[in-house]
Length: 168
Image (cartoon, rainbow, N blue to C red; front, side):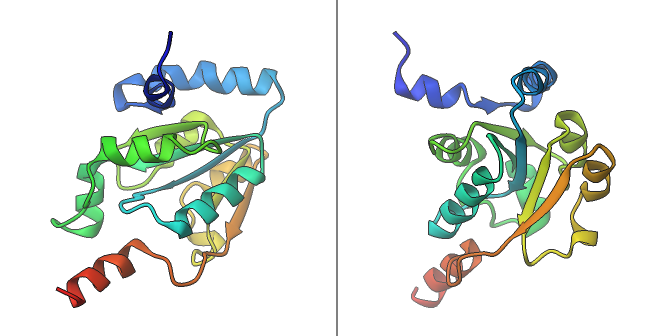
């Protein structure tokens, strides 16, 4: 019998497993399921992430999250990040019932991953202008659409870290 942890781990795709993505995408197309994609570091999971990701999933049938690897997070946010390692972050995300797949990417942007999975809907926060969303032009050129979601005010990983620093 498969354990709950194994079910969660089966929702995580490592960098050396990208060959699994094209058949997965073909299956979704066959089943006429809309693939929603978003990405991020998701360093300290908080209520804002849950709100954002659940709303993203509501836009389609399947939610795939591109997750920055530890090396990618460090390049983008500095040597003190990430706070949590990539496997822990992936397990936390994959444990949500509304998340279908978590895929690691090591690049600074998820453009190659976006081109591989060809999402129907690309989701980013409303703090991004459409012109600044990596992969937006590509997604639209393949018939997909771009959605920008508002964040839940008062919740951010950076804010949590700053509060810890301020309170010693």
